[in-house]
Image (cartoon, rainbow, N blue to C red):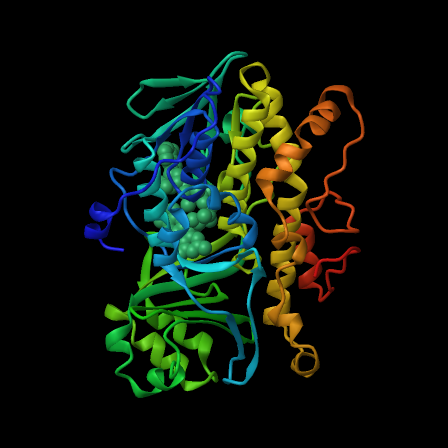
Length: 465
Ligand SMILES: Cc1cc2nc3c(=O)[nH]c(=O)nc-3n(C[C@H](O)[C@H](O)[C@H](O)COP(=O)(O)OP(=O)(O)OC[C@H]3O[C@@H](n4cnc5c(N)ncnc54)[C@H](O)[C@@H]3O)c2cc1C
């Protein structure tokens, strides 16, 4: 998508629910904030977005949107056509680091196949779609504090002024300023010990290299995952761009900042002994410049809602993921659809109840997706190749059907009243949107990391496949 396309494109208006009378301020115009804002607008809420950046910028590389995040956008006219412009149209090809082919997998459900997208362009599409629906997005709006009363919530900006609404949605990512109000203080992030080195660049010049050209021979679009000892690399190619993301032990002082740049040379030692393609690909990186993102883990507190129920966290502000969950953007979007639906069901009279219902409906599912990410990382980095030869699905089918076959908007609508009764009257309510047969129990990242450090396999009851 280029800026000319944006000017030429006419986007139909969404058919909206009657006005709910609820004013909603969203802090953060990332994937969670914009996804929620569009759906909240459709659900009849009066929504505006506050974004810290001075203007919209397209940043980021390849990421996956699972099926569960793609049902509600079918109700946004014209959106899926726009989405097509940023998709990598490919199954996921799995290979061993030496180039041996393991298998191919078409992710997702038939009615809404999962898809790989360019994050920068997808973000641009959300922003354009939101603006075209009349949603106000205010830039240079740096929120420093959240507050609430029984009847309203608000935010304070760095220049000292305030903004008030019926509900405030904290979608301000890993550095959210809502922790003070929700939890008193912010939990220290835990170092996962890994980093992701990532970059996207034009395909043309790189394809002049015969080793790179050979690897992509016959493919207009391709997404592939290459598994090696302690590291794995995702490579994406479209007609116009190539993207690589190397997940590796952090030996080079990565920083948890999407604008932190490093030399692509730091990736080379991690692909020593791999097929020659990887070295050529890394060396083809323009200016040898990459993002080196430190992978931090945060225990997600079960409570994403402020004491009086008027401020609610979504997306990375509430929970973060390892990339091997392949669920960060998916869960952020799911949160948005669920919250918009709960606020619509609750209406002006039951705002605090609605945010708590949303939290209750979502927490166990999100927690399972986080846990799955660590299991996958262990699978990728400590691979038993003899076993994989007989059972390639241990690498190719790592995202559970429980995660894929879910419609978070419908789930919220269908379960709102019984969950509300559970919260108000203590009547039994059990979620059915997480791992079948697994009874959720509290766990911490420290416990899981200690277990894996001791060489223990993380074995859970239930069907995680
Ligand atoms: C620049 C960038 C690049 C990324 N690239 C990738 C990628 O390549 N692959 C991938 O898998 N994931 C990437 N991510 C992360 C991914 O988008 C998220 O993990 C996931 O989509 C959840 O989205 P989110 O909206 O919760 O968080 P984010 O996408 O991080 O969005 C949070 C938003 O809140 C804004 N914000 C933060 N603090 C404030 C404040 N105080 N006041 C107002 N606004 C604030 C931020 O500027 C940002 O726009 C990237 C995130 C960012 C910000």
